[in-house]
Length: 392
Image (cartoon, rainbow, N blue to C red; front, side, top):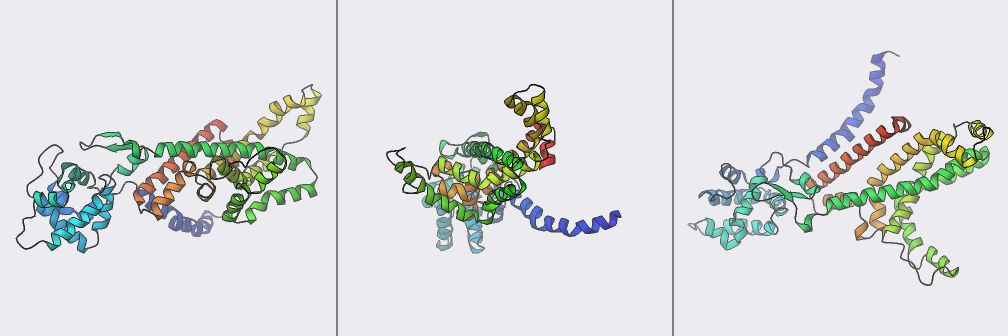
């Protein structure tokens, strides 16, 4: 086929991916480093702070420019966004900035709008710490959100230091996400490998029926499957009732709204993504290799680990990588069956976008997930010599 025809055939798909996948993703991730709210609302204030350094006295004309910015930003409906952005660094300043804008607008003619005026509204609005935060948000780019995802922050002097203890949560959440994802991957491998091996050993008709059972979860909504586990795992659910009836436990176990429920539900959802890559490779391994190993005196266990398992390694790597990456971004399942200490990074991304409107931090956390995924992808590529990538 001529190269021009191949390019023409690829153009619709390439254009679709560029417009509806690449461009929105780049735009979202760019929010992690963009600073637009404060420059848009407080341009005069930032101009007056251009030569100011932390520790120096505030410029004498600063408060008049600040007051004019508040008045115009309030009229242009840009003040709320800037106040919310500054509130991330100076707690409580959002409401006081809105109140200060109202006080400035309602001030009697001739009222001096100076440091004393803003001190009367709230001393924070006349403090060097507040204006240092304004100066750090001058844009057009900033590392504030990226530093926050690493539990870091800038102090009043602009130096990077560890965030306050109350704000040091994201590295712990990332570690929790990695631990849960790795645990789910291991469980899927332990449960999926025997099923994939069985599919290669039974006759074709039985294999078809087993494959239907493997694919059955794909025919049910993820939300429905997760909600079903809520019913099954609750204290009066099927699992606890059966265990108590068999006399194995004296009182119901706590199987939901904790790490146990998260692992069970996520393993059930992601198990097919482990079985299918395994089966696609295991069915291509000739059975006479194992018979040849046995004929040379190798016990079945030795033959399995030294002959069969190395040939299945690319499938194991590909299935594990697929399950791990999917688990990294899971939101619905941990949100429904997990407790407060079991929420993953995706939960915080969703919360910041839908509840608090902190798109910058949501984008930074998304970028952290993306970078972590690429790093793990590269590590898997190196360990497998590129074989897992060929499987994926």
